[in-house]
Image (cartoon, rainbow, N blue to C red):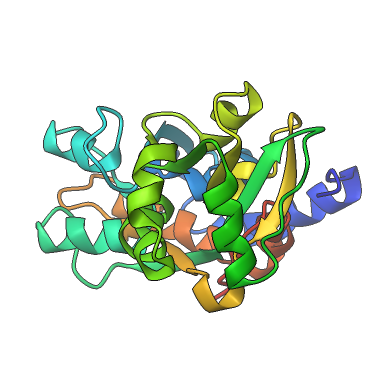
Length: 261
């Protein structure tokens, strides 16, 4: 993504100020936790929101699913307090079912697809078709995949569908509490599978591409209000900002397809 120039940033701030005028009179702190795929977009957008609204966003980060200590489900289980949560649709629905989130408050922010990356300078494998992807997986000495939503899809659906689940148990590794790109970048895995938005920012990697359409999983990353939240109105305003047309290009530039309202 091209960096924002002064004119563009001023335009964003101006349009955002108008949208936030109703809440800007009284600054507040809002606690938000977001999962990996939306992180890059989040980090670019939050400072704009803070500058325009006067509110302060206290941020936390974790995987959408799983029992790693820093995963979003684990944080909720420990009783950590948040006003707004952003995560994959599967993780969100699980928290909603457990009564952690406010019914009917889900808003889709972006869509994400699963991509593949290798360490920079190494040969890019062929993943152009389902059969090519299968052979690439079988030929790889080591494969890293996320402990979040994309990794769950790979291990429980894709590998069995390709008929290679048993072989992948020997070469594939679920990565806990770390981005897959970091594992591939330091040479601990030959292939890395994760959401595109989580792979493209590693300068040490070469992005190979996305999974073939026939076996691709498109995941929605969505927000929801947390039960007992103290700053629900500011949280709603932040969500409207994340889905506004004025920031769609920023979201798209991070490897996501924005769900503009």
